[in-house]
Image 1: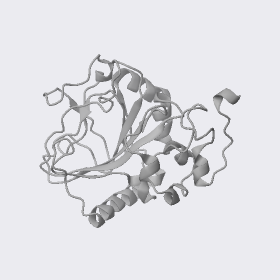
Image 2: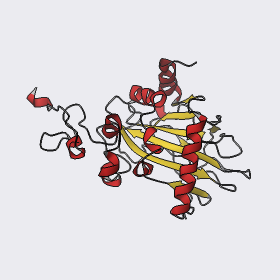
Image 3: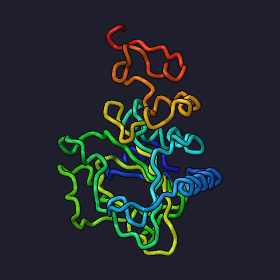
Image 4: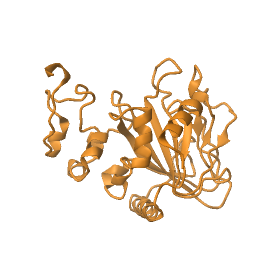
Length: 265
């Protein structure tokens, strides 16, 4: 069994780590069934751009659907790694599914924090993960990564061919990476679909990729655990960032947190 410190050391050194066989098979079945049901009801079709994939089905804003997705962000084996990379004030940036179909071509290599104008390399402000709901193999489109690329002084030139390796893993495993790591979805040359959950986090002081407070109905957010409510943004980072007139936004959900902003201490 790999210890937390070893995972954090691997991310610092290589830009990624894999949590092997950590997700319960029954829960994965629930998640997979829910994805299929939502996809049918919403008549989801592939995108028309190569980045998202012309043979790939994607569902966004999964937390708006509640369970079984609501259990994902605070899943302890993953969250303790993410908190070690960012800190406990981290936020859910986006939760989506990525279902790569047969015939899909490789996604361009990119970094998830590439749009943020900071000098590189820099401390992690994004920490993302991919949950394997099927086996991830080189043939079916396992995420391709460039180890150590998070330490480079530039982002990948989009559209150029870049050497990478497949992050192969068994169903129930989770790939976790530093937001500056160069990576991309692989080509699917098989007849089977490669299904994964993209559970992405960001530091508490930057904007989330999906607007969780507006995208998730409040009556759904009220059913979440207090920790998940904090993770989607109903909280205050370091007693300052995100308050509403010196009040905790969790009050909008009927909670009664004890907030004292930093300058009142």
